[in-house]
Amino acid sequence: MSVRVDPYALALATPLATAHGTIAERRGFLVTVERDGVRGVGEAAPLPDWTEDYDACRDALRSLDGDAAPASTLAALEGTPAARHAVALATLDADARERGVPLYRALDGEGAVESVPVNATVGDAPLEATAERVREAVEAGFDCVKVKVGARALDADVARLRAVRDAAPDVTLRVDANEAWTRAEGARALDALGTLDVALVEQPLEAADLEGHAALRGRGVDVALDESVAACGLEAVLDASAADAVVLKPMACGGPDRAVDAGRQARDAGVDPIVTTTYDAVHARTAAVHAAAALAPLPACGLATADALEADLAPDPAPVESGRVRVPQGKGNGVPAPPRE
Image: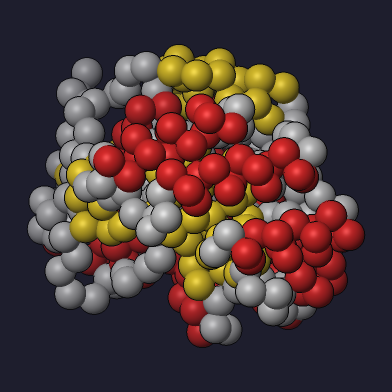
């Protein structure tokens, strides 16, 4: 098996604020594998707080041995989830192309899945701008919208969400606090959000506080955990009964195969899986769509992120239309492999 690693850098349309600072571009690597004339392509898009850093990812990919068995190669990448994601995706893409099936079928998806529901995401903005952006999302066909909260005082966020509910009375409304609240603030927030028919609050407390999250459940608003899955592991989240839903990022899980396995484990425990991207380029973003399709039916997922990039590495085979993302039905991931050198 031959292996080729190519770096890339893509500017974000709007800089992304993280705990490690503001990210203005997504840098990563395309990994192309070829065996018996069949090629597959994977993507590593490392992101601080979720995966290894860029240098560690680069070094892990540089150490790949094309003569090693795929299972041995993946085992050697256990500590570098973005690098593992790239190799796992490339291998799965090649396997699916060889079998003549779409990637989600190679992930043991059942039946044909034409599309997956997705949510629109509205960032932090003043009250009137937030309401207008939600209104625009609904007009574009989204019936589920996630609003970022936590950067302002709780009362200010509640006022923003009240304006959203007035502007879009029928939309399924979620909020994402990104660990912003204390336990007391979280309890007060959920009581207020319940009066606004908010369906779900994502990561209200610090990632490590599984006991606190468990205590917030049952207040009329579902609790979804995202950062906690990365920080504590899915099994710890499930063992603590800390979530009604878990957010699964294939890049952070270490591959679409790992994300699908985690989704099935969560569902067996009575917890809803929600698949999202990490603002990836087209290869990883499309693979996340296939992972969601393999787990279908699902609640609305965070897969409508193509417009976060100013440009992409290839045409998008999974466009978003009326609040749903189309699942590619061709061989493999659906993204053309780069030309041979």
